[in-house]
Amino acid sequence: MISAIVADIGRVLLGKEHQVKLALACLLSRGHLLIEDLPGMGKTTLAHALAQVLGLSYKRVQFTSDMLPADIVGVSIFERDSGEFRFHEGPVFSQLLLADEINRSSPKTQSALLEAMEERQVSVDGETRRLPEPFFVIATQNPLYQSGTFALPESQLDRFLMRISLGYPTREAERALFQGVDPRAQLQQLKPRVDTATLQKLQALVGQVKASDSLLDYLERLVLHTRQSPECAIGLSPRGALALLHAARAWALIHGRGHLLPEDIQAVLPSVAGHRLQSDGGDGSQLVERLMHQVDVIAA
Image 1 (cartoon, helix red, strand yellow):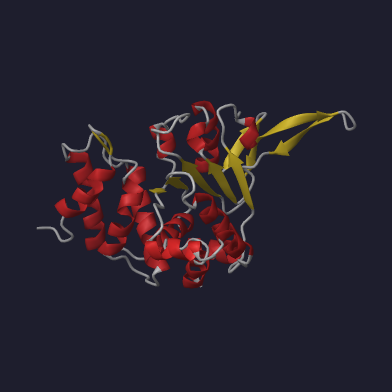
Image 2 (image 1 turned 135 degrees about the vertical axis):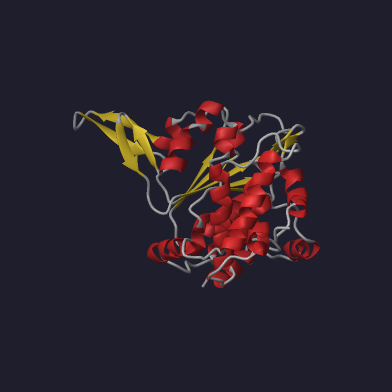
């Protein structure tokens, strides 16, 4: 089932099987995904394809500098006929929300997603409203050197279980595009592979993937190294450590295993830890590769 899902999305997003699996692992872990890349790399296509194949309700919000929190959450409007206020749901009330170019909006608007992403609910006019299940946010952002962007604060970044980049297509994938493979046409042909109930069962199975004591020892050494290394200005928090474990379990499940291997942790580590670690020079992406070489799988 999972391999069929990956294959279907792969027909739309050519040559990006690894990134597709990471996105699926993020969803199965009940996390949220941040995609950072240049415009035109297929970020929106990936989000739409996931919604199609998984049978999820899908909404897309284009973030702009003048967007308000109510544009995301919703607003109560007075209706003259009934003489009452009626709440009109915003796009956040969907199973898969694509927050496109989130770093083009102000920090105030960015923060409107915080409660929704963490609590899976929103509070409007003193009333708490639950969001649909499953609830998955895919946010995209352009590189910060592009004009008109606002850096996401650390509290917002930490709400994303993973950050990935799609990058340029392979030579073979780009040749297929030149020869007439239309991703939009392929996207329209995608059919749901699972229903909501089945998807929630898969999410529940992630927690049943077993982790041995030696594997957890390896995970603890990785986390401790980030906190003690002079290279890391900020190490992994307990939430970041749990995110790494959940993502690794989902990666193992995607590959048909009911137990964790060190390779599962290593496969998701760059996406889970890269945006959480910080060095004196800035972003911690460069630290992850060194981290995997500096921490032995088996304790000395």
